[in-house]
Image 1: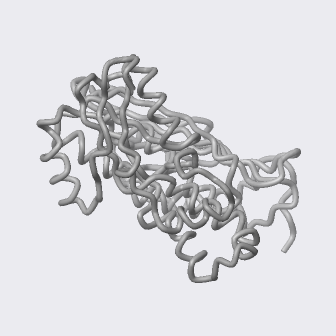
Image 2: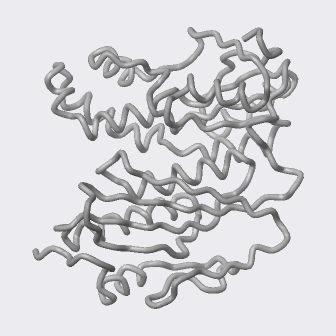
Length: 311
């Protein structure tokens, strides 16, 4: 199959991709069309929450990563992710099938979260070695629902959903398989680690929306680059507080533990999309844990927020 020329994707190909979309959101006044350079939305009276994040580290399933990583950041503020735009840059020599695969990943990931893909840009670009997807997510919320990283307060309990380093575990299994084979890790193990991308998964949208609808949450934060250790530091710095964590209570997947042991990595510092850090008053913890359990989300307390300088 011939490769695509440098520049924008051919209109015929782009028109075929866009024909797969079925946007039913009445707030979308103008969605993606060949020749249209922007989307038009009618968000109503709610607050609009915006986030932009590129996916540059993965060569596999970049479209899937882009949607979920951007949706996570919107949801942790208490907002419902609703509209997504993606700028997709493909390296020279890319085949049409590769462009279509990434588009299908975007469509599938958006559908899994009931998000409308409303626009973006596609291009064959010089100077890049693998596909890059720069995502832009918009969500909405009522003003009284806003949750910020700086909202953590001394006395709060810290709850963590799922386990740390889900994203990093899946990424290493997908991008560094030869190194894992050299460590003696078998194909079934590697396959299971790869599938961590989907189960338990890297999305925390359900975690966040369940938490803020069923408990009085002061802070939610999505650990990404730098892992849990960086996320906790960011909470402490944003809120001007200290943090005490019981290390033995922090859950680590068996796949993550074995991969990190073999490669000499620290799970606490590994990419950690998929787990959500929540701080809230102790009286709210039982209700939160119950609501998360009802939603099929594992969670546990791992520590508490203290005065600055103590943690």
